[in-house]
Length: 308
View 1 (cartoon, rainbow, N blue to C red):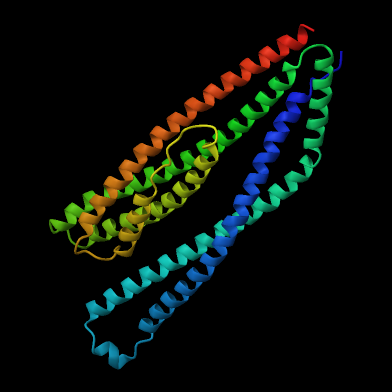
View 2: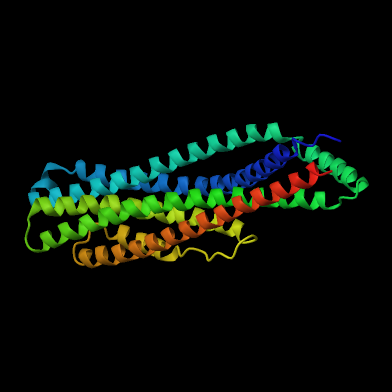
């Protein structure tokens, strides 16, 4: 009897190779978009830095014409906007560097799978012929089923990872927004300078988490798209996240309706957090079902082969 014991390993290598190819394509697309964003953010940083430096260099005559508190307020506002622009630009550069390293790593890994498809095809064909000669055409069906289940498992693992990262980001945004709400109420009641500063610090952090959540939701949406050929999964709603970020972040220094914005953002984040949590549980259930199916098919296949 021919030895086909390593066919399972080759099938897993095929699934891993397919996953790496898909991941490489996604990284290429992402890096192209990030390159355009880098140009925009670099321009924004230069603009904000120039505006801050311009205020720093105001002449003595102009300074005397301004109230000291107004000048400090202008300096604080421009400084914050400059630091936010700097943070966004530096964070983008880190993302680009990280994705470039991932792309290089994936390209290197793929060199180890150059011949895996030929190996799999040849061995599967040899086994099919052998099984056919012995009256067992069903063997090829088993191998195809195992390959498909492994591909489903790989896609599910990616979606689970993306969903987990989104939940963590949403949780951080939720915590900071909850704190901002409490400090905001204290500020409205006349808490003074310190509550206002603490509130805005939480707002700034929350806005960064909201932006991060929006990006992670977009990644998860792509992963769910890949799963759509295997499962019926509704796309997670990311519009509310994007709108929350645009409105909230753009008005981070406006006190006129900031408490209302905090409350609205908090409600949106809580809703998305619950949606992501439910989705994660659903994906975990699918994963358990696939593992059970893989175990079942493998057992049936092995029992058939051993019975020959």
